[in-house]
Amino acid sequence: MISDPRSLLELEFPAFEFSWTEQHCQLYALATGFGQDPVDERELRYVIEGPDLRVSPTVAVTLYWDYRWMEASGVNLALSLHGEQRNVFHRPIPPTGRGRVVSCITGVFDKGPGRGLVVECTQVVHDVASGEPVATNVIYNFARADGGIGYSSGPAPKPHLLPDRAPDAAMPGTTRPEQALLYRQLGDRNPLHADPATARAAGFERPILHGMCTYGFAARAVLATACDYDPGRLASIGARISAPVYPGDTLRTEVWRDGDVVSFRTLVPERGNVVVLNNGRAELR
Image 1: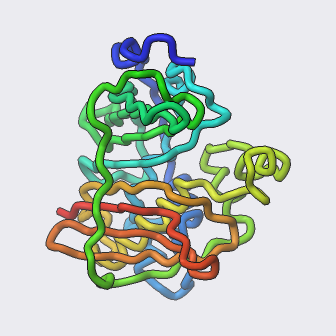
Image 2: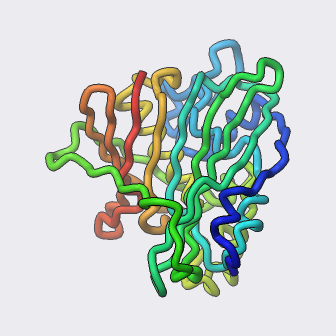
Image 3: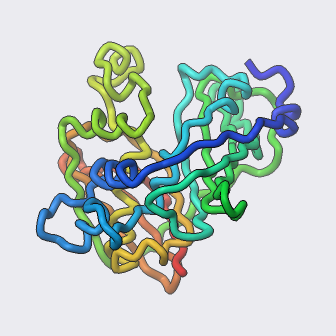
């Protein structure tokens, strides 16, 4: 329960240090769809070690797990969902490194009684050696049970509107039945994605895929269709998680290109084209 929402914006969390390896970046690529065509050399550059190894920028969401801010927010974590994600990439993420992240709660948005509450956290990752920023992760936690507190820190972020035309490109992505079990090896061990009883208690027929895994599949589609697989061209990306994906679903990410702005969404065709990731927006360099 949130007793003083204004105080959340004043919380200070000690910096959290971590490191990552080439193997972690390769595992992330495999867990988000890279390498599904074993002879596509553009994708193999993300999964085969060597001097030409490329790193998918959205690996930034898995380089560390610092959720002290969620516990400090006071919301009911059992009834909370990762509702939206945004990333800014200040420079390409190297295959190995040591980082320091500082987390701040930067927004509280009350949707009203019975409609939930959104808590925004901004996490800036710096390279320990140089002190330079590497990536910024902005997480929006949707607390379904905590609406009606009568306070918002400002207007809630508006969703990016997709173009009113047919997409310029589309890319499939096949998730495997064990996709969530693979993705959880990156550090997100939420039982919702692995334990059938936990999933049923949350209202799902079986464990669901991590929303950030779907996000990684979408980023792969943006890299493929708008960046010629060059991770250095992706300056930022963000999207809303709009529906669950079940491991084994086939994804279809639709992409619109307008100069350096890329709009996208991800659907599951075999489930009536349900939109599982929506209002996606990326900026290119």
